Image (spheres, protein in one colour):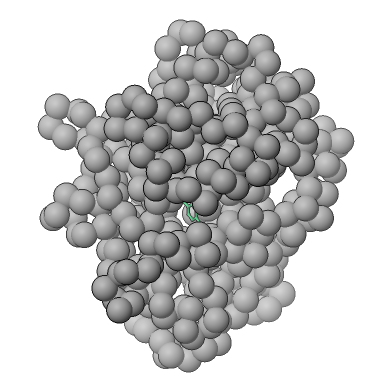
Length: 395
Ligand SMILES: *Cc1c(COP(=O)(O)O)cnc(C)c1O
């Protein structure tokens, strides 16, 4: 399946919907991205960083307690929670920061909502000796104090964004504005498989290490391919990172899980495929949550990392071609899964990853015992303890 043509389209989705002032920056990036990651020196340095710094390969763990309790398919967890900084985001941050260095840029900028990508970008910038400025909405700065402190400890500068809703989408707008002005010195390190071409392909390629490892590991352990892959979908990077290596294996079914919030009917969710439609946001054409006149809607999820109105364009295409099925888990289901995994396996998942676990809890039961599911445990839950405290389910 060749799904990526030269212009950065996945079927009708993707592209480069940016103002003229950004085209130069994107062309420079595209040119560098085509050339640099193929160089032996870059490959070696990136591999070393992933191995010795980020702690890869992450294990593929057979969750025997969970499997037994659910009473159906065999469930494996891809342990991205064990990567440095506690989530998959570091893979992309290291790849792009290294590319920035090879491009001769001295400064990286990033956007962040919950602060997770800001922390990953600040970490990668620190280890590679780059200056790092992170744009963050003032509401998010208030809500996510521990990550703001982490970024500062890592030597990054957090720039408050007062505009608009004072959250992620406004932070992205400000970062893009900065990039337009400072393209000579500055690299824009985008956090998910989103944005104008070449970001969706580039982020996917840097994250595809997840699926490459998982394939090798499952073949070693089970001598065959899995029947299902399950991952949560925010912008779509951990899921496409797991899925990509298996897209040509037609026996492998794939399920992406969006944030169902308080349910689709409530309007308080971030399930773009269940409640959204086609549109353009932040340089790419994909599925969006928007109102009748095309205004971007407020989203809601208990997990900050899934709380974004758009989804990566490759996912829109994988849905259209029916290669991947998309569903959602509500806040309540995700919280139940969060507790279930913590108690059965001794692993506290990120609330984002708990959405994928919630789907596995429904799916595994329905399948015979000889089926195999791999679920991407995209991150660990330490960052979410503040959100869990005071939730009714816990009281
Ligand atoms: C940011 C984040 C996500 C969502 O982002 P994707 O790009 O969809 O992967 C999921 N899980 C964790 C732990 C995150 O930090």
